[in-house]
Amino acid sequence: MKKMRIKEITFSPREAKSLLPATLGWLEAGSKSDYNGSSVPHRPLTELERTTKLVQQLESVEHEYESIINRLPRDCSQIERMRTAGTANQPGDGGLYLIAPAEQHHPLMTQCFGEWTTVQRRQDGTVDFNRSWEEYAQGFGTPAGEFWIGNQALHHLTQDNCSRLRIVMQDIYDNTWFADYGSFRIDSRDGGFRLDLGGYSGNASDAFEYQNHMQFSAIDVDRDISNTHCAGNYEGGWWFSHCQHANLNGRYNLGLTWFDASRNEWIAVKSSHMMIARRPDCDANVTELPVLEPVAAATLLTTSGLGADASTPANGARSDRHEPSDGGRRPHGTTTVPTFALFGQHFVDSRVHVQQTANNG
Image (cartoon, rainbow, N blue to C red; front, side, top):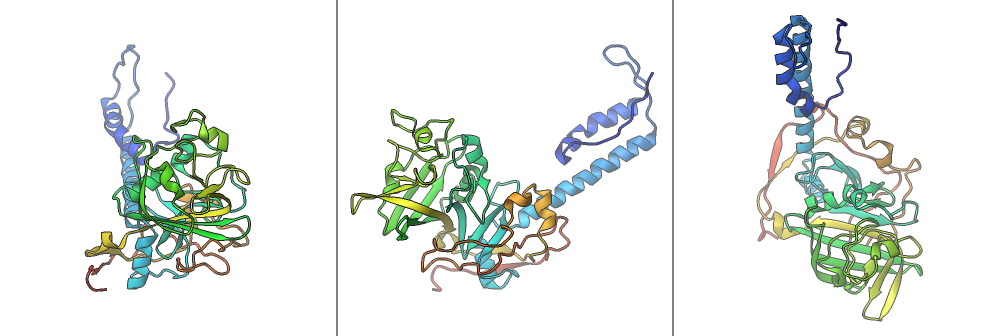
């Protein structure tokens, strides 16, 4: 009988771990008959030892990776608190960061402006937003350019009902418009990534309220209440109702609109920037913050599969024309990419408690 050899392991750590009992039983069984009566050749103990050692190494990598994910900040609000408290070597003028929202099992890269986490950006039409419901769930684009963070990440970031939303828009006449919402939450996948928001303020009019409590629609999933397929007509995924009073994901130069009820006119949007931040009242208690040191970007970017798609453009250029005067800090010059090494050796293991009370001003 032809002998079999183990040449390559292509399982993930979790898969390899789940296969270990069956593998050990097969190796220890020696020459036995399978269900067809054929003979299974005996395997030497050294091969059993090698397999066991390999699985142990895979388990170690899995645990170390999970440890790193657990140490990453959950959003830009946490990064800003760490920076303000002096517990992290982070620049204070914004930039690209790896974050790990609660229950998110892989890191995400986004752009921070102070406490504000970028979740959407349109600026030049270079990224196609006419995508499937699943693509919108996972996210696409580049954080320093046109970008959608992903509905799954939006749910993880906002599920505790402690988020606020800021939308900054510029129209084709270079006027700047703002829409702030004091509460913002996206439901789970099972809930259709339903939109819940309130507490409007700004100069753009509360156009988003028209689509409040709607599930997310895309080119292949129609969950609006219109007789037409709004996502198909406007070529972009969004929370549509009888189609829209606000839509920032439509086809560029056609579908980016916001209805200004105070003037009874449509704003022809040229660029948009959606950001979320934690509400201050949700973080009034003692919060334990990790002490993290930024290192070279390559290792974890490669390991997490982010690669070049998540990096800054080669010339480091970006437009900051979308930012409100009272908003977060802007990057200047070439944007740096702080991130964290894979196996934990660059992490500072100590942790610090920051006292934040609602009555200390």
